[in-house]
Length: 164
Ligand SMILES: Nc1ncnc2c1ncn2[C@@H]1O[C@H](COP(=O)(O)OP(=O)(O)OP(=O)(O)O)[C@@H](O)[C@H]1O
Ligand SMILES: [Mg+2]
Image 1 (tube, rainbow, N blue to C red):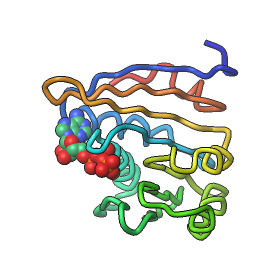
Image 2 (image 1 turned 90 degrees about the vertical axis):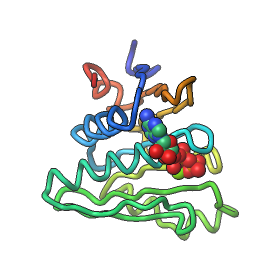
Image 3 (image 1 turned 135 degrees about the horizontal axis):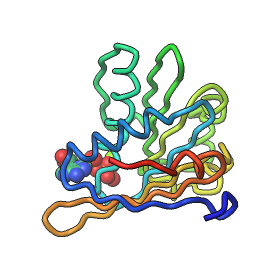
Image 4 (image 1 turned 60 degrees about the vertical axis):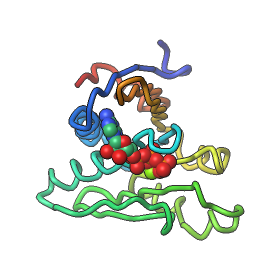
């Protein structure tokens, strides 16, 4: 597929170890300016995947940290010598002014932004970066999660060759 329409990939995550492996593969490809959008119903595994990605990135720098869900704080930030990572959950966001207070544009300039429930402020979130990875998680029979990944901008090339 061309870089213009993006590249997409579907992966089946049969258990949490597979979700952690995907987090690890994405962490190895993460760069400043990245926007990762995590979609899916309640309990689909958005936080589990974000946690796996953040912890894999930190572990590569010898850092061990808890990664709680940002459901109530809206944003949690993590720092390594390479990157600042913001993990955001917009499920409970109010209006646009509340979004501005989170300072995501500044973080996108010097780090990566992972967003659960981006559809709560789709246009504003999309504007953060053209280098985006959309991940849609669906709950399948027997607890399996299906992940559909779509890379735009420089993420189109970075998705190629990704396997677990
Ligand atoms: N393969 C899997 N990948 C991810 N999570 C899994 C998997 N199998 C089981 N789970 C479980 O599914 C749940 C996913 O919850 P999680 O908090 O990540 O969902 P969420 O999409 O962030 O929901 P919310 O919209 O409420 O934030 C966890 O309890 C996790 O243990
Ligand atoms: Mg969550």
